[in-house]
Image (cartoon, rainbow, N blue to C red):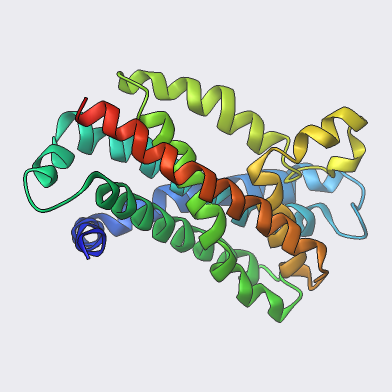
Length: 249
């Protein structure tokens, strides 16, 4: 399958730059954990029966996975599209546009899982994981990885300038991250804000990761996973359509 070959191409590149890439995505969440958990956390009362560090640690797993997928399918995909002309070269061979999108999504989802696992390993080493259910988290991260990859590549399909990704990061990713339940419970916000949180994809990812890390499994987690899955299914044809317009029409 062409998408698998494209994924293999990206993996060949990743093997050459994996250390630098992982360190970049490892250091920032670690700094947040240290500053918020050990710094601010000493002044914050327990949340939902947890220390502040215990509360935010699983959210860092979800957010690290989100940023990995998002950056790969914004900056990474745009560079391959606009500067390196990698997509155009692929289309000159026996490759369809849907294969290119699938290869990009597979690679971004893989990176999402890798960076999520890295942070999960860190919080486990710090003693912030309470349950063996945490072993399910890497598998679950496939779903938000797909959703955030597709969101990002849809934006890549409509932007003509690499500087425009600042809008995506500042106006979408950052607010979604800050009001996702990573740093404080969503139910502490006004009712309308709690309702809005349900259209925030990272909120659903945080809820599942926190529950799995703490061993609080309940059927409602399937709803969170389902919302992300539905979003991914909806965005897949849109991503193909937008890149088709960009490359062919």
